[in-house]
Image (cartoon, rainbow, N blue to C red; front, top):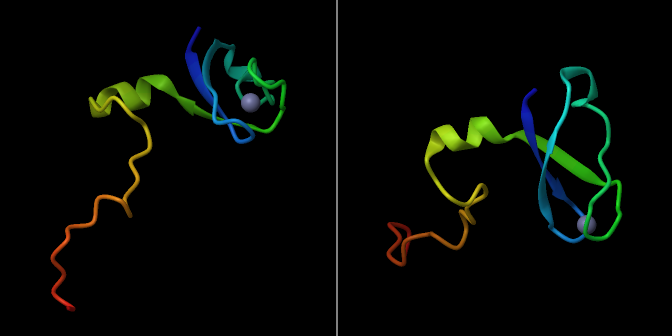
Length: 69
Ligand SMILES: [Zn+2]
């Protein structure tokens, strides 16, 4: 049974659940705040990338020097 990662849009809580394929598209309630507004992604897909954090703030990592200045 595949493990799915979920992230809560309300409080940002990330949690994992083992679900059947048929259940994977069902909304999962956040264990932290109880909100049903969560989004899903496969945890295995992220593990392949090797990075720890899933979402990198691209804007914050802009180099200080810009060719347009
Ligand atoms: Zn939440």
